[in-house]
Amino acid sequence: MLIKNILVIENAFSQPKKADILIENGIIKKVGNIEGVGIDLSGKVAFPAFYNTHTHAAMSLMRGVSDDDPLDVWLFEKVLPLEDSLNEEMVYYGTMVSMMEMARNGIAGFIDMYFFLDSVAEAVKDFGMRALITRGLVDENGEDNGRLKENLEFIERWHDFDGRISGGLGPHSPYLCSKGYLQKISAAAKEYNVPVHMHLYESAWERDKYDAKEILEFFKDVKLIIAHAVQFKENELEALSRENFFVSHNPSSNLKLGNGIAPVAEMLKKGVKVTVGTDGAASNNTLDILHEMRLAALIQKAKNPTNMKVEEVLNMTTKVAAEAFGLNAGEIKDGMLADIVIFDTSDISCLPVENIKSHIVHSRCKVFATMVAGRWIYYNGMFPTINESEILYKFKKLSQKLLKKEISEIHRSSI
Ligand SMILES: [Zn+2]
Image (cartoon, rainbow, N blue to C red; front, side, top):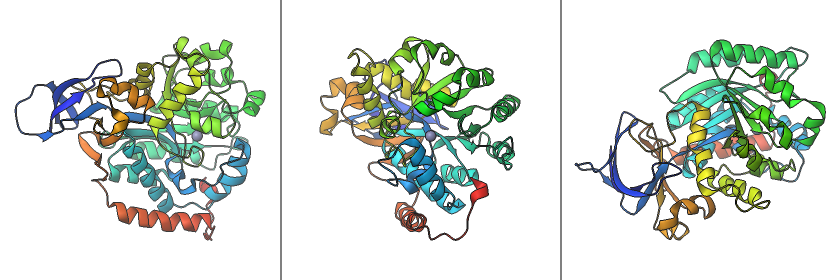
């Protein structure tokens, strides 16, 4: 594929320049003046696509179920009872609809934590996105009903599928995993050489009961993606600033569930690798990384307007997020994965185009298209890889069934 006459922003820190982009086998082959006939995207801007580093994609089925509750009520009283009734088909369509929303917002890949992992992976395979998929792992006194085994078997089945799907391990949190179980998961992650994805210090009550430093020590030798990290005090941030640790900052979810504001500006000063996640649609309620970037910037600017510069925020969702994911991506240059978002500069939110990077973070610039591995997964309002109306029809039927609790079959053991 050859894209002609587009304004290319190579990475978060560079300025737009007019160029053509040649893509071969899912990789950016060349950026510059290229002869040949291609698709003319003059008037558009190409930027490295975004990665959403924390979500539970299938939760789009539960969007809006609990908008005014704290985390414990949200989780234990509203979400878990519904999750008892989920089945494979629901997880497939829930994941699919979330990917449509993510693609529409310039996201090329996501790090997921859920269950019925084969359904998640099948949806990702069909849609054409990237995903690092982890199973939510919980135990009671060391007994996990085979969840870790299931997670590892999934990794063996799907690891590096089509260069787009990979697996990791997803211990839910210190409050749903015993210490012994966390250590077992860490050992398995080392043996399989896969990342770990875990919620940590999301809420104040969690902080009162668990020592994050001790838990982080369990994972010192593996890649760890830490969702939330809201409750860390400034003098504890050293523990997060390791080469192999990544924080996934989820500002909407943290604010909405009353968990507070993660000390992101302070983390960045300490060299912590911070990325951005949307969390699931049952807590956010959108999977809009552009909105998340703006919010992440604004809540730190409330303390000091020089915090969270545009380039810094864009780097968090592209280059740093790609590193968390383990992808050679986050820049539009020769040899990188062809994951690209195209912005429409004819839209008023993207004008004046001279300040386009500012608009991406602060003005909700309109996404025209999203490309993953050289293939359009979203293009000018359409989703070329799927049958949109059929998917939405199935999604509506299944979510209606779920929310009315018409499911007789109970899947408690699967969760
Ligand atoms: Zn989460």
